[in-house]
Length: 448
Figure 1 (cartoon, rainbow, N blue to C red):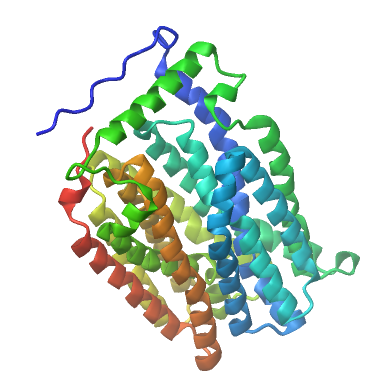
Figure 2 (figure 1 turned 90 degrees about the vertical axis):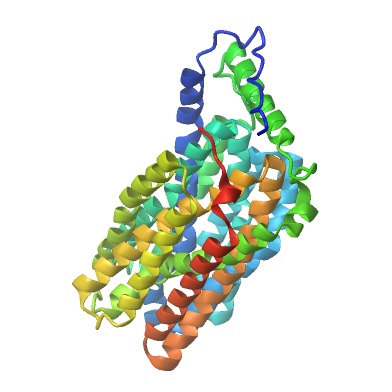
């Protein structure tokens, strides 16, 4: 059995530094703003779920138009993810995040001027273009501040932004449409895009002044703390570089593409993203179809599933870390979500039952997604993880692009989402089978 990497040598400057205090200081400085940016990102990409009621009323957009609009967001997202990441390598994570947030805020505000299907499709496509690169940019920023032993928990904190956005987005969006509809001659959905397009622009300004690309640029760390973080990151990179497989370390895009497990995880991500779209984009529609017509009530009810999801996600994630088990935690979560989708398809439209099933589905989705995204970085080195996760995410994004149109067209053709939910549940269950058969427990050896 190979000996574990030797403990990093402490430089004189880093000697005696309290690591716990140092990383708590960094976390308190970096994480709140980063999580808020992620929350706003998800709100602006999914507020179309609340707005679709007004768009249907004023512009006649049916489920097929809505579904294609959601799909076009992911088309722009996929096409510009790689160029955005290339620019990230040149200008750094902070400037990249500023560019992305300011531009998506402008596009969100511009969506208030949508007049027909063509301008709606263009607005959604441009939103995907401008948001491309935010997620990997944020994860790259974390890698510049936290060594891998501390980065996973920070990534989990970052992921909390997804369910939080579901809670706040539903409540705030419903309140905006209920309160401002008709004011100044603007429709409720126009006020929604106008108001929710402002925060990312303001946050871009805060990122300029409060975030730095790496510890060396942080005026709020002492020289000794900077040296300690630098030593930890260097030791982390050396340790990862020592991890080899048959004499050759994982690394680079070509090696990631040759790694069978990367492709298997990419196919699993298709199931994860299909589930994610059902939770993020179709929850308001499912609740509305159950008989909830008022936009304020729609927002309140739509906030319940992600609220439960936050609690369950933290419990499942903590249990997964404590047991160092990943496959069955993710698989069990997805199985629960799939059966909740199947139950939704035959629920009969009872509001209480629908909300309960949506809450179960959301909680299982958030739990499974958090654990699933810890898997690639466990067996891949840092260099391979960067490209491997990009491949996995890109493959999942293709499912994210296709599934909204699928559900939209199915509802238009059948008058119900039932068949679409059943097909989606089948895709999720296939992802479970792939995960459990394609990734063995021996592939995920972790040590405390």
